[in-house]
Length: 91
Image 1 (spheres, rainbow, N blue to C red):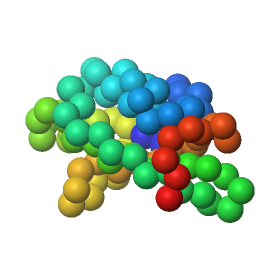
Image 2 (tube, rainbow, N blue to C red):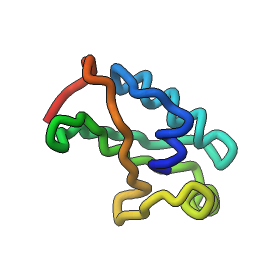
Image 3 (cartoon, rainbow, N blue to C red):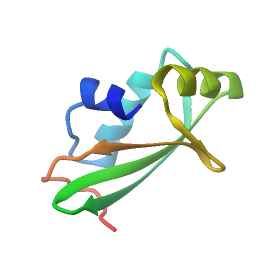
Image 4 (tube, one colour):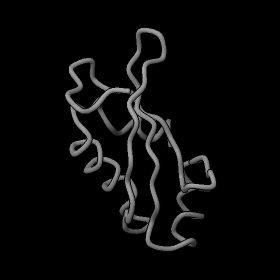
């Protein structure tokens, strides 16, 4: 999904805007039922770790296969670049 986001989603300014973009990408697979973010710095670059759940295991499996999302014990995990003007929380 990292590649899907880099190719389809411009860097976002806040978690609400990012969630809308993620929901749009996930829509063909299912509904996003859980969404959590944790912005982090990788050197000078601002990135956000995103953890999501979809409305069914089958939907998550399809998303994982198609967009190469990482699965963790907590759900589907991926990273996206963020705009340097990010106004959401930082960790």
